[in-house]
Length: 255
Ligand code: IPE
Ligand code: IPE
Ligand code: MG
Image (tube, rainbow, N blue to C red; front, side, top):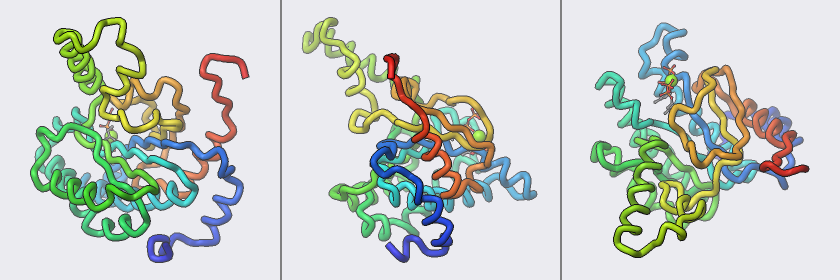
C-alpha cells in the first residue's frame, strides 16, 4: 500500500478524499483517456511522449479509484478506429501494456487488483496479448478493484457481434425471438461480466463518445474535463466523484 502511494502528496490526497461519501461511490467508472497527443504537442514533443506520460496517469487514477472503493475501472486505451493512425504510433501504443505491466503487475497483484482486457484479440500483436494474458492469469483470483483495459474495443462492432450470436441461436432453435430481452442481449456483449458504468469521464475537452459502450451507458452520468489525460490527477478524479455524488439519478422515474 505504502509503496503504491509513493509521491502522491498524502496531505492533499487525504483532504480531497475526506468529503467523499463512501456509501455512494460509483461501482463502475469508465474513462475515455483522451488528449495525449495534444499534451505532447503543447510541449513540442512527439505524440508518443504523450502516450508515455498517459501511462503515469493510468497508475495515478488506478490508485485513486482503489483508495475510495470503486469496484471496476474501465480505461479506453485503443479503439477499433485507432488502427487508422500512423503505424509507428500504433506500434508504440501496442507496446505500452507490456511496459505498464512490467512496472506495475507485481504491485497490482499485491494490492488485490484484478486486471482484465475488453476488446478483440484478433488483430492485436502477440506480445500485447501475452502481457495481458500473464496479468489476467496472475490476478484472476484477486477480489479488489477490477482494472479493465478497453483495447481494440469498438461499441458498434460489439453490438453487431452480439446480434450475430443471438441470430445464430435463433436460427439453430436454441432461442426464440421472444426470449430476446435486454438482459439476454447484455449478456452477449464483451462487458457481460461488468455492471454498466455509473460514471463516464472523458478528458481533453472533446464532448463525444467515440464509439464507446453505446449500449452500456444508457443511464450513466457523464463528466467532461478540459484537461489532457497526462495532466489528469487524482484530485481531478475526486472532483468527478464528488460531482457524481451531487447528482440525482432518476432512470426515467420520479425521485
Ligand atoms: C488518447 O490520446 C489515446 C488514444 C486514443 C490511444 P490521443 O492520442 O487521442 O490524443 P489527442 O486526442 O490526439 O490529443
Ligand atoms: C477515443 O479517443 C479513443 C480512446 C481514448 C482510446 P480518440 O482520440 O480516438 O477519439 P476521436 O477520434 O477524437 O473521436
Ligand atoms: Mg484523441
